[in-house]
Image (tube, rainbow, N blue to C red; front, side, top):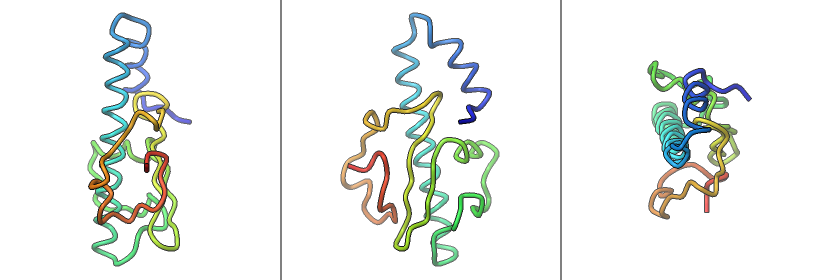
Length: 117
């Protein structure tokens, strides 16, 4: 799995020092942000085209700061909706650490996810 350069540097800086609690929290926050950004782009694609993209590379108008979604989530188009898994934040992610309330999933096309409870 390819880790973004900034994530590797951040990991090197904080993983072995007294800020490891800070690092764990940052990893969860980056994972959360990547997941939500991917959802936003996937759902926008669906609104514009009437169907979910076959692959993430089909997404349009991805800003420079949002390129990280291509490395941080795993996407699969399903017959009815899609599967989206969190893969990496600053390092590999434990999906059990990422939780969303039931209302979060309402209206989304996500049918399967490693964070879906």
